[in-house]
Image (tube, rainbow, N blue to C red; front, top):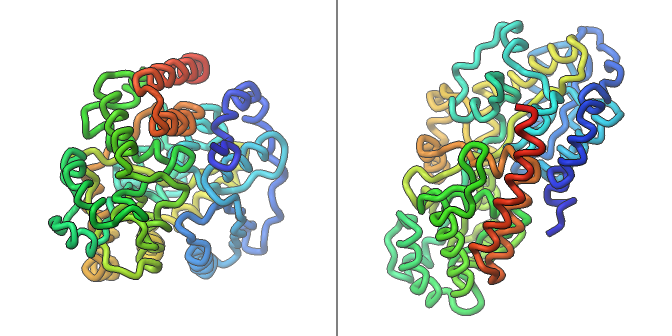
Length: 430
């Protein structure tokens, strides 16, 4: 596992916690020079989720046209969410802070816990902006101590993608498996069709969000990685889910890689678990007909993706300008533009009543599946998204499992590490 490129910031969270007091007030820098309209250049750090740089630029241009005097600089914050967090962490230690950052499901909380992100509730209220139109499940994912620390932006869930031609050749119904037990029944048929050079199922490895997808498997079998602030990977039901994943690997029914979307798009895998945020890319690259479906297990789908947040160490003027921008970035028109280009989900309720969005979903039933699945999602386990280093820690354990190590032993060690992090880094600050 390459922790520094994958999510090294989270792996270093313990060290960051030691410097939390300094970092919370460091890096405020000087305010950028204001433009003639008083808006000032707003620095937006993004990893361009779903290869969305052109779309972000389009939205920024529309914002500037609608708000003369305001300018926004779109800054490459890194190739993934974790690199944005690393760059922001470095700025906190002494440097020029951005005005807005992309903050993912696994990075926002540590910054909020250390008071490095600004609570948005009062800022939004002062600007006369209401939040009741945001999808509740997505907006409330950023809640800590009764305050919200981000607005939903590039929000996703995992989807089940399947190659319809292979499905048909295997004699399977044109749908995803209702349960993982049903997939296990289908796997030998898929293996017979794809042959030795291909694989029934493609999934991310432990360095690339297998921990996110595994929650679905664990939840669908009655387990979970934690209950509130208690680590529960060693629960027998969670161990059973880990054992199931290991069995898929032993039977060569699943392959793990850095980019399952690429393998699926190339026809190497019969099906894949991938984010809704890759739907646009798969649609563009796949040369075959494919379907999308809910994840196996009713109501066992985790939310995911990222929001946009504002650093705490900014002047009041910069915070005010940043709020104006992030509200525009996530308004109905912008979320329709962004989701249609990338495959991420609309973050506004009223977006589904937008004529352009309704027409788009009717013409793109694959995207419609993702929107429909949203009602059956749940917030992720604290062990993954709120505990420092959680995702990387769980991913490493899952890599060990698929390599053949004893599941109960690996998960017991995982619980010990997770609980130690909770007790030392989280509970003292709650």
